[in-house]
Image (cartoon, rainbow, N blue to C red):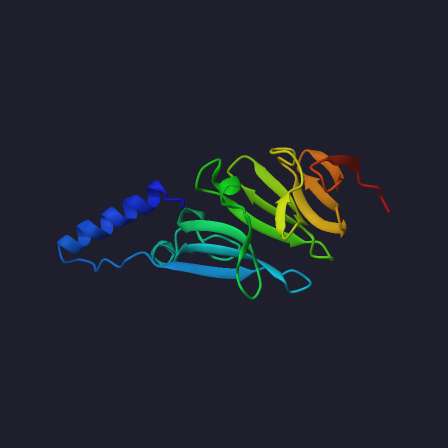
Length: 188
């Protein structure tokens, strides 16, 4: 479970305010948001976060997508539906560079066997692609291989269109065993 410095500071502030009768301390309550359901309806992207803390932070540079502050996020997972069994944990990938990230994007391929997760830090964005094998989604490439490349759409299963600020559009073709090849996107 990720616990940020921001969470600690807000909790301490509430505890001090409560001691002086200025606020009521509420225990952390895990809230979840299920979004981005796969085309076949069997999987979804789940964000679990500290609901009261997220509500307390509202109004401070509100996140554009979803209204959830990354500092309040406790886990990011792909879950099966309707059981909500975790089939991929994306939390470590997102928190590797800190607890402040934005632009969380999640894309499914048409066959629901491939997905791409994207997020940005202040100076760099990351895409992580996953492939369904043996009932679990596993990373389809080496770490950092899709750094500063934003997913646009799945052209077909295993083929992801990417864009970058400083490079021409590309397609990434995944072999399903951890390999990926890149090609410049053909103009139409």
